[in-house]
Each structure stands twice: as structure tokens, then as C-alpha cells.
Amino acid sequence: MLLSNFKKTIHFLHLWLGLFSGLVVFILGLTGAIYAFTDEIKEWVYKDRLYVEVPAGALRLPLSQLLPIAEQAMGKDHKISRGQLSQAKDRTYMFRALKVDKKSFGYWNYYEYYYKVYLNPYTGQVVYKENAKREFFTVVLALHMNLLLGDNVGHFIIRWSVVCFVFLLLSGLVLWWPKKWKRKQLKQRFKVKWNAKFKRLNYDLHNVFGFYSCLILLVIALTGLMWSFELTTEKKSKVLSDTTQVTDVMPADRILDQALKASPETAYFLYNFPSAKSGTVNVSAYQSDMNLYDRVQYRFDRYSGALLQKGTEFNKQTIGAQLIAMNYDLHTGSALGLTGKVLAFFAGLIAMGLPVTGFLIWWKRGKKPLS
Image (cartoon, rainbow, N blue to C red; front, top):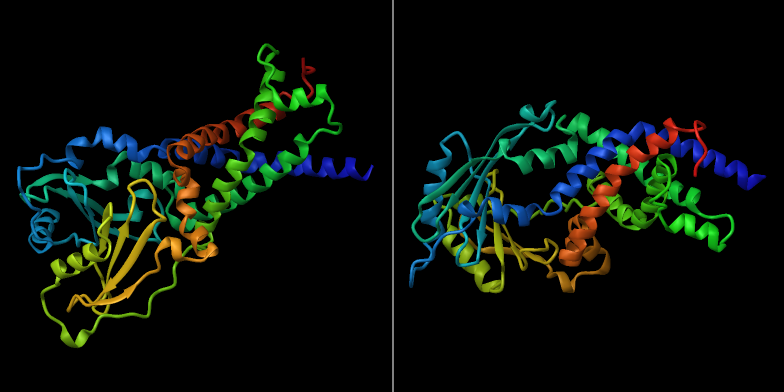
């Protein structure tokens, strides 16, 4: 009796929380599935802006020569905040100018501007200038993160919808759990009856696919909540640049040269330009194009170029720090390479389908028996 009442309560909560969060979960599943292979799709669709021909015997121009070219291409009203400096010989350098209003409502108000300039690092030629605010994958990511409503409103809705989704996954597992582990019941729990009538087929799709994807979706949802509740946010460093030696010249070449010598096997550097006068130049050395967790972070004095701080390499971090560092890669599946991305893609499709099949179960309830 007690178990029966418990399951009825779980079923009630599962139903209404599913109806409450279903549309958001559908959007998250769809956009998550699309975003799973973003890098691979960009490699194909944006090939002309990502790759250059390497002249025989040519060397890359110094960063100090490329920066003014990128700044001129951006325009004086768009301040460069980051450079992505690939160490692959045939890749362009990408510079980004981004300014957002986190208190605004709506996508078009959130981004005050967002531009990317791709340069040929051998000639300094502007290969492509992109208004990233209108770029497809930027819009998909914003839809995934805040429903195109801005951080204050959209992020709040996303956060609590994902909390509901975690409960739905756990409660769904409780409802899926068979009373008796006999062959007939197990067959119904583990196998879709493809030749059944629509009502039974829909129930099986919800029940069976929900079970098989439960663990993967839990990892994706919980890592998403880690971001949402800012549990992966790094503490602001107390290391500052020495403003007593202020000059108009940023020693970009010296900084990049030190980072290259310290991390010679780097796939690409993210070179972050400081906004405050006392801010440091933060350089992240990513050791792989596939994963974000395997990186080393450096902080340099923006005026002298002196190395102020070096982060701990991934394999030397504590287990807790490694899990935090891997949060993005676990969320997208890239922690397991291509296999993980495939799993994340199909999990996204299943997550998109669960609210639909769940709604149809509720809508068709009591109308016809399952067969």
C-alpha cells in the first residue's frame, strides 16, 4: 500500500513537471543535438575562412603586426577581447570583439556587438569578417542557454526546467522499474514493440528509450546545472599587472613566445586581452582540438610581458579539479571523443522526443487499451 501511494505521488509529479518543462526540454534536446557536431560542421561549411594555403618556407607574422590589422578590420568602436591562435600550419588566426548586456531582455539586445575577423597569419590578409551575432551556431547556442530571452529571464527558465528534467529522469526510472523481474515484464521494459498500435508504440518509445538514455542525460543535465549555478566558475585571480610601468605598447610577441616555449605541443592558444588597466593577459594553451579540459593557463603582465602565474596541468590536478575542468567536455560528450559526441547527439534527440511521447501518453490516457 505504501509503495503504491509512493508510485502514485511520483507519477503525479512526473506528469505535471513534465508538462511544465516539456517545451523547454524539447528545445534543449534539439539544440543540444545540433551543437554536438558544431566543430565538425564548421570545418566543412566554413572551410574558406578557417584554412589558408601555406607558402613554401613562410613563417607566421609576429602577433604585434597582426593585431593592428585585426583592429582596423573591426573598426574603432569594436574592441578586440580575444584571439584564437591555432598552431596548425594551415589555419587562420581568429580575433573576436564581443560586448554583451547581461541585464537586457532578448537576443538582439543581449549582444551589443559580436564580430570575428579571420586573418592569414603569413600575409596578414583579412580572410573573412563575420558578424557572429547573426551566425547560425551562435543563435543555436543562445537558444540552448537562454531561449533567446537574455540571461535574466531565459537563463532562469532554463535552470529550473533542467532541475525539473533531472527529477523527471529519476522519477521515470522509478516508474520504469518492474514489480517483478520476470521475462515478460523485462521484455516490455527493454524492447520496443514496433508492430504495436500507435498508443503502445508511443508508450514504448517513451519508456524504453527513456531508460536507455537515462544515465547519459543525467550527466548532460547535471553538468549543465554546474554551469547554471556557477559551480565551475574560477575564482578571480589576485594577480595584477604593474600599472607603474604603463606604456602604449603591449608586448604581445614576448608573451606568445613564452607561452609557446612553455607549451610547445599546444593545438591552439586563446589569448585574452585585459579590459582593466591592472588586468593581466590571460593565455590558455589547449593541448587538443577536441577537448577543452586539457589546458594550461598563464597570466602575464600586460606591460612588461613577464609571466606572473602558471596554472596546474590537467594530469597534476586533484580528482575534484579534473572533474570541474572536464565539465564542458562531459556535457557535450567530447570527453569520450567521437563516440561521446555520437552518444550526446542521440541523447539530445531522445530528450527532444521524451516530452512529445510523454504528452501523447497523457493526451491519449484512458482512450484505448495498450496492445
